[in-house]
Image (cartoon, rainbow, N blue to C red):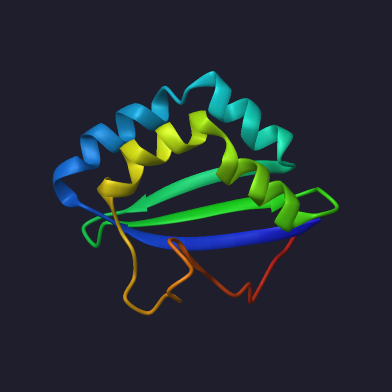
Length: 109
């Protein structure tokens, strides 16, 4: 199992819409997330900084293959066409990243 933590900004004017669509995530998106071996997926919002923090556990055997499957899914691409313009990637992220990964420095079960 691999735990992930990522961060990205959120445009202030879209916060109500972002919350609304995440309260009603399309069933196909939820099924794909599960099919790609992601469990315990949570997104937190920190206002007034408007930062999103995502946390999940990866329970698969081939993370790159599962992420390739996710990126290739047409319905996920539709979802990202809605959510990506709402987000503000951190300037410190790598050019190949959208959400910036974070280093886990502590965990307690």
